[in-house]
Each structure stands twice: as structure tokens, then as C-alpha cells.
Amino acid sequence: MARALKPAYWDEATRVLAKTDRVLRKLIRAHPDIHLRRRTDAFTTLARAIVGQQISVKAAESIWQQFVATVAPDVKARGRPRLDPLAVTAVRELALRQCGLSGRKVEYLRDLASHFASGRLDPKGWRKMDDEALIAALVEVKGIGRWTAEMFLMFHELRADVLPVDDIGLQKAIALHYHNGERPTVKAMQDLALAWRPYRSVATWYLWRSLDPIPVEY
Image (spheres, rainbow, N blue to C red):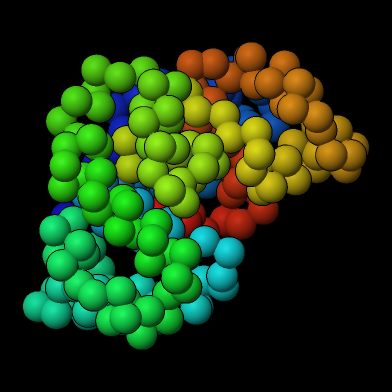
């Protein structure tokens, strides 16, 4: 498998952040040769995010494999499958529930598939949209809140300047490195991150590495 391409802005971002922030300079040096990378297509990425909401990683993986086997029996669940929204809408609710999905998640996945199938969510136009406009479009889908949308912008769209202030991991890392262990307020996080612009996604990603050195892929 070809190595995932590094985002075009990554090297410049690490140079700038290392110059402006001593904590980030140390983290960047401690984690060379790893970076954000896109996993698969937009619909599949969002579907997987919905499946994994509020359950353990192990449970999410098991349900995801059953879900893929149900909606796309010829596609392998492991690796980087690409799912068809129309295939999801074609499967009966009972069959989706038998994958281990709750009734609410079935509703969310159907609504997501409907948004893609109808063109209400069209990745072809996303490059022209700024971060807030794309977040606004994504949260119109049932089951997608701001945090999920922000993770999608970072991990799939590879947007460089996302600051997910509601993320528990980012809050913990900022408390650890900048606030003597005290949980920061949203304003404190935003004020601290002013120096990281326009690369707040990169700063966030390295702060996550201080808590977990193994990158998560969405």
C-alpha cells in the first residue's frame, strides 16, 4: 500500500509552531515522520464516526464490520472500504439493527445516506466552503454535532486551522502543558491558540500525541 501523502502545509506548520511555542517544539521533535492523513471517502468516514459514537473502540469495530458486511457484502470491512450511500438506504431497518446498531444510529445513518444520495452533501463543492460553512452543512445531518464535524474537517478534509475546544483530549493536554493541571475555559483555549493560527489543527494533533503517541484515524 502506498504511503499516505503528507498534507501540503504540514512541514511549514511544524516549522512555524516550533518557533512560536516551546511545548509544541518538544512534541514535534518527539514525533517525527507522522502526520494527519485521510483514511477513505467522505461518506464512509462519516458513517464510521456515527457507528462509533459513545461506545468502546472494540465494540465499534465489531459493529462496523457487521455493518459493512450487510450493506456491501463484496467489500472488506478492514482496511479502507468505500460504501455507497444508496446501498445503505436500500437495506431494511431490521437488518441494520441486527448489526448491533441502536434504532437511533440506524436513523442517523439513513439520514446521512440520504444527504449524500440527494446531493445535499456534495464533497465536490467543499473546497470552496470555509470551515464554518462546511461545519454548518454537516451538522444538519442527524447524529452529527460540532465535535464530529470538526474531527471530519481535520482528519478527512485535512483542514489546517480547526480548534476543537470541546475535545476532552485537547482540554487535558492544554491543562497538562499550559495550566498546571487545571482544566482551561473555552476562552483560555482560544486565547492560547491565537499564536498557533493558521495551523491550529496541527497544534491540536501534536498535543494529542502527548497523551497518546499512536495517531487515531477516522
